[in-house]
Length: 132
Image (tube, rainbow, N blue to C red; front, side):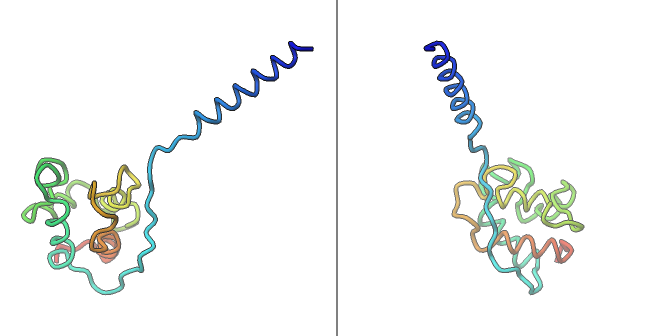
């Protein structure tokens, strides 16, 4: 009879161990609850100033890490690096990185969604990602 209890206990312990190991957090996905932007979004007036302030910093996307988001190269880097998808904007690489669906939300270490960049970026891509 004690052998049955030992086997049952081992099975319970194995199940608990399996459940504990399989329940790990690997990524954090931020849900963007900000209202959709319906006004025209300009790359030079709305997007680039935020990229310059939050992304094109030393050791980040100022040429050290792709894409180069410095004022002189940002649009070209996003466009030629396949970071934009105007057909399905929510799947654009730049948007996935900003929202934390690829890794930690960008900009790394900053407050979530500085200056509403996620909504602005999505609106800009939805509007055709023009270099305006």
